[in-house]
Image (cartoon, rainbow, N blue to C red; front, top):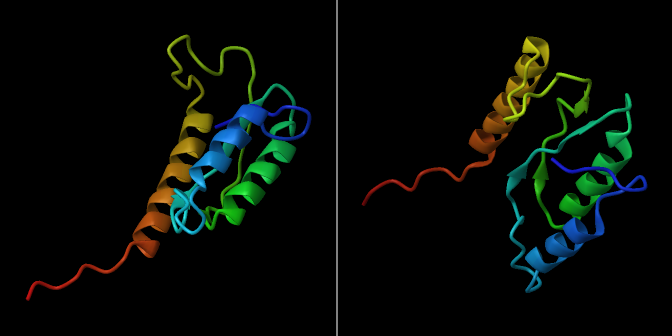
Length: 116
């Protein structure tokens, strides 16, 4: 999850991702299942930042979850002080993203090597 800065991702996040891609060919995200979720006060403000983050992750050969897309409008009281999601509909939606990511992980996991 990332905030959106000027229709993109924060520079410090981009820098960290760039460092994770070194050395060439050994990127931390290579073939790793990932999901992108964002929240903002506006209805779609996280969309542009997510698009940029997805693009960066795809450049690093990450396996980016396409659906469901995680755009969450942060309204007063949606999250508790401890980060708890107070709205059951939003909590169910977030669970659906996690379930889809688990499915992606299972689908892309290398087959177990049989014992010899």
